[in-house]
Length: 204
Image (cartoon, rainbow, N blue to C red; front, top):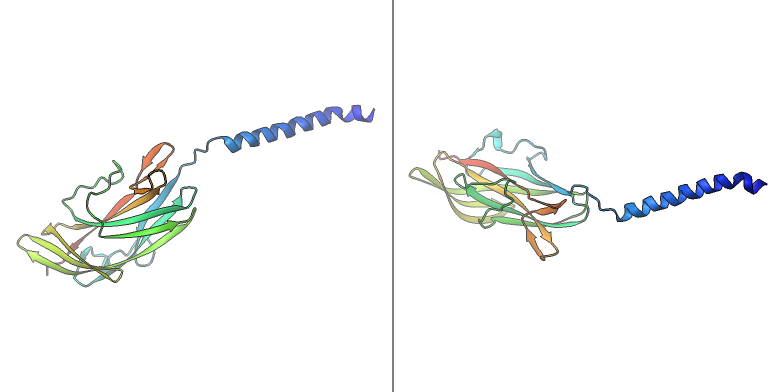
């Protein structure tokens, strides 16, 4: 008699347990559609989104040093190997910022290969100085920079009163092609991350 009294309860409990295990099993195989992405940006000398230029003036005097931090956060769900490529161009170069997922065809000025753990943030110091520029008729030619204590010789002209652009691109290692690509795939769509900061060089 006692078993008959608890039999409905035992059946209900067994059904709930079976249902719970079934849902858990299905969930383990069900595709996850969480958006996967990187946060990619630039911080100023105080590791904040401000104070990028001396006296907040983007027209630089030769020899003035700028101290920035490249900011990257990994929301990709796994550890990622990335490379930050920094390119220097003048304002005549068209930039397709995150529109067509196309990198600039210009060579990198400097590159930062990084291992970025999942759900982790890296701040990459980027200290730089323009040390040599040559004024010409109606133009100025940027000749030499120091980036993180390394000297880089360049030859980039710009029309007077126009500006230069320091372009930052995020390249991500793709295991299927065993190479770095400009961007990543999330939810079946391809995304990329690129930004630039403009500056002028004082001719006085």
